[in-house]
Structures are given as C-alpha cells and as structure tokens.
Image 1 (tube, helix red, strand yellow):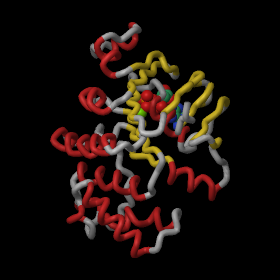
Image 2: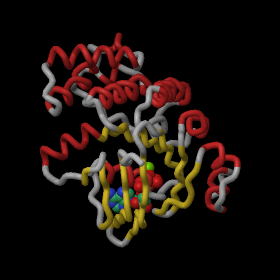
Image 3: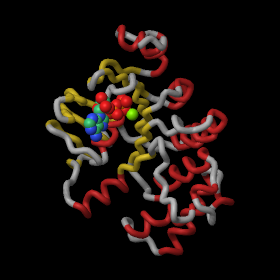
Image 4: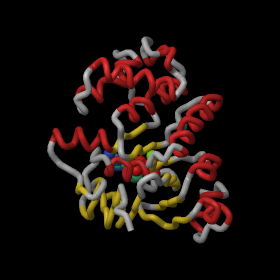
Length: 244
Ligand code: ADP
Ligand code: MG
C-alpha cells in the first residue's frame, strides 16, 4: 500500500466552546479526487483550512506526503505551495495583473526566474482559457474568469494536492460550468484534489470517492455511485433530498 498524500488521524478542532472537528480520519491518495459533502456548519471549510495550516488543530495528526505539518514561517510557505487552496471568493491580489497573480508565488516561494515563471504562467492561463486577459486586473474579469485565474495560480505552484472550498458557490449560474469544466480536466489529468462542493453532477463525474460530514464527523464515505444511489445514513439521505 502506498502512503496517502494527505492523511488525517483523530483530528480535533474547537472554536471556544464549539467542537467543530470531532476525530476526523481521512486519507486522500495520490491522483485521487475526493468530494467532501455535508450541511452548512458541518466543518468542511475548517477541515480544508487545517490541511494547509490556516487553522491549527487541538489534537490528532495531519501528514502531507508522509511529513507532519510544519509550524515555522519558511516551511509554512512551502507547505502552502504543496497544498494549494482555491477559495469561494477567489482571493486574487486586486492590485496585481492576472499574470502577476500567477507568477508571484513561483518566483517568491519556488525560486523560479521571472521570465520562466511568466512563460509557465501564460501556458497555465491558456490551459484555463484566460490567456488573453493576462495584462488585466482581476476586477476587469468576470467571476468565472477570476476563479479560473485562481486555479491557474494554484497550479503554478506545482502543488501535490489542491483543496477547493466551494469554488463555484459565489458565481453567477452561467459561470459555474466553465469553472467545473476546468476542474474536471484537472481531475482527468490525475491531479490530487479535495473538493468541497454542492455540485452533485460534478461529484458524480469527477469524484473517485465521496466523503459525507455532519457535525464535525465523517459520517459516511463511498464511491459516488454507491453514495448517491444508496446513502447508508439518515443524515446523508436527508442531505441529499434537501431536508434540513
Ligand atoms: P462548513 O464549511 O461545513 O459550512 P465551517 O467549517 O465553516 O463549516 O464551520 C463549522 C463551524 O465552525 C460553524 O459552526 C462555524 O460557525 C464555526 N466556525 C468556523 N470558523 C470559525 C472561527 N474562525 N471562529 C469561530 N467559529 C468558527
Ligand atoms: Mg464552508
């Protein structure tokens, strides 16, 4: 058995009195696409944020490619290059061009020469279909274009895994598909991905495994075919049928 790329064991997280993650065990294998589902407030975003150390944990263990999460500044920057994250709200640098948004990390963190970083960035912008926007600023782009830039920026770091936290939830409906298509392409190219989403069609098409969380616990997991056809728990059945 190969070592999981992402491995969580017994992860606990509190916010004050609120017990948000309750003994999370989760593996993501190399090349695997895991879709994380669950009701609002179940701890999905917090879980993603612990994996690239945006949130600390109270107990348990997280390993990336066999190595425990670092705690010092320089190592954290490298961790966040290895474990890229794409947020609901894009989080692009507003005062930088699209191209600069994609070259900044590779130059600063990976030590690429600026010209090499620009060549790579243009190729990645081409891959996500926004190369013609390279010299614009983020606010001049549509939401769907901005999110595709954010994906190019994540890819530019040559990450081991990309975490997506509801990447299409802030988009106008007509822009959801263009972002999902890019993500589907990455999945087909073998990128390791952990994806929080409510897009069930994407989950069915792209996921190797679905993990369902409720109240800070992994309640159920399985193949998309099994999970959607035969959810084992009442909580998952209620979630899938849209009951609160
Ligand atoms: P999800 O992404 O599944 O909707 P979250 O991980 O965002 O869930 O939140 C889980 C719970 O933790 C919620 O009750 C939320 O209000 C709470 N929470 C999240 N972040 C913080 C924080 N920084 N401080 C206090 N409570 C938080
Ligand atoms: Mg969330």
